[in-house]
Image (cartoon, rainbow, N blue to C red; front, top):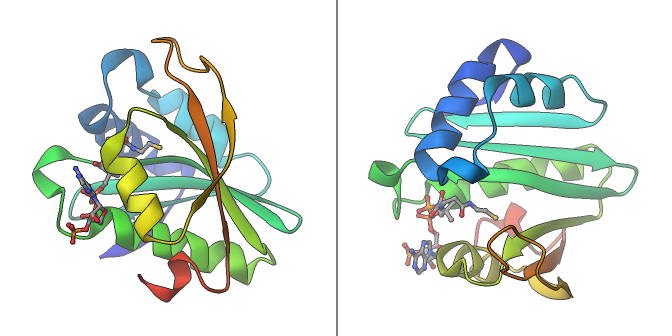
Length: 148
Ligand SMILES: CC(C)(COP(=O)(O)OP(=O)(O)OC[C@H]1O[C@@H](n2cnc3c(N)ncnc32)[C@H](O)[C@@H]1OP(=O)(O)O)[C@@H](O)C(=O)NCCC(=O)NCCS
């Protein structure tokens, strides 16, 4: 079940994030708490083992992070969280949803492409390991809100 995350869920969000990301990419509970207090930022938790943070600014929304714990992967949790975040963003007036993903993150790229995201830019050597970031974008009407 997917539920809204409040600042009091910061520790749970950080725990889920730590299960999904390498140590240098993890966001701690303080970071989660700080983000959730910012205007336009919202979070969702899937009790199967996943979380997403997103931000709506005017008619654009951004996926800030998406994490699914390894035992919960390939069961539609990531897709469900993405679709739920897209639905909330659209309800708040966003017309497009964008995100950054590492060029070498095959799983995430496959998920986003399947859900209708297309490459809109590239930031060279954006990540500490030297990987490029791809900027991916999706119009909200036909993309993840449709549920793939
Ligand atoms: C990327 C991530 C969020 C995907 O979560 P998930 O719950 O496993 O994804 P889903 O089960 O919803 O997958 C939906 C579709 O995406 C694609 N996909 C997901 N993982 C994939 C993989 N490892 N290889 C190939 N395709 C994949 C498939 O098309 C999949 O559908 P299918 O299982 O019917 O073939 C998860 O692997 C993760 O947390 N990774 C580490 C953190 C991360 O990279 N976050 C994104 C940063 S931008």
